[in-house]
Length: 228
Ligand SMILES: [Ca+2]
Ligand SMILES: [Ca+2]
Image (cartoon, rainbow, N blue to C red):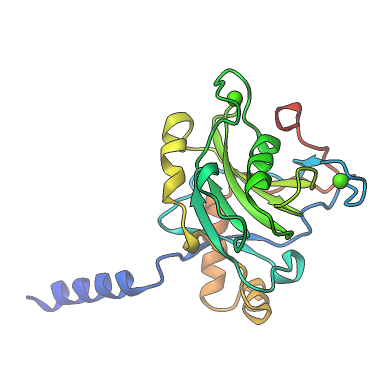
């Protein structure tokens, strides 16, 4: 092995030893900023004004990272990836929902509200959380924040849509999401990442590369009728 061949091998080995989930998509702000959602009105508002479009989210390498001061999930994230019928009744706050229909009728839309209702039927513990579901009208997988996964009327905020792949290919990717795709860092780690220190600066450039459309302003309207 020549010196250069060895060095190439050593670099490759070092890269393969690096954390598998290295490209964060940061969610910094209150998910209901700019919405008229009232947490106490007993009505579900589905807010889409902050939705980000991610054209190149790589499930094997990329991670949704949530501001610990905003999302307040102090006990950490607990992920389940299952069809609705196999969801547990508690102990989780991130649900990757493999089910893509709620009424055995492919002709009716499966949207964020329908997905949240399926999840609420299973979950019996109150608490905020996130879910990933496949929107049958838009044909894309989306990330949603729910103020209470156990409530059929809790307000929802659509945080992101993965714009590729679409349709059956997107559905086929759902089982691949795992715990590594979601993180709420310690406050100190989060602050460091915002300061852009060291490697974090490079990671944030990568975020820009995979986040084609920066979030809309807080003045944006609510979700379209597709999500009601
Ligand atoms: Ca409400
Ligand atoms: Ca349906």
